[in-house]
Length: 250
Image (cartoon, rainbow, N blue to C red):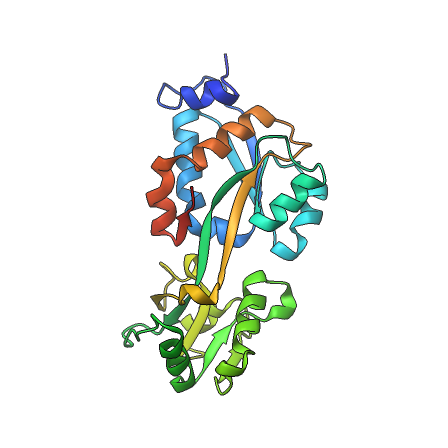
């Protein structure tokens, strides 16, 4: 007999069930790149539950939750958007779970020096000295692009030679050699071919996105979805999230 919900969480170390369920997950790219692939594969091995996923940009996530086919059993969103969705009755009560924080970081070309960006003045000096700093075009609806754009438009960053990626995100542009440096979420810099991640921007800039996961109100398999949420948020998963650029916030 297939296990569901809390029983599934309790039995994750047991032998896989004979007939696994399938659950569907909807998420933005930042979650997919922050350890989701490894953790969801581990969940399937431990539980026997097949996990499929779809990726949607943050600007269209709220609509995608309503129209996605198949209907998602689990969703990932920025924490503020998830809270708003819960207030609108869009979540199964008690399933919203804070996941963690992804920071915007600096990337450089392979072999280039890793500059000290530990303080705001040092970061400003580094960016102003760069021949070019690339990032995703904010007109595409990217939340991180909007954060970066707002940051670089502040008076103290005047003089930075900023540019938008001609195709894809800033990390992709840097790996193609279009710029000297890139600003991008760390989860999308770490492990990316053709560049090296320097580290996150100074915390006082608040250049980050807090994330959450939950079971939507119309989930076809809410108990299996909740088991997945709890598996992804368990403390044992923290090192995997961290290694991909997402810091868990308990």
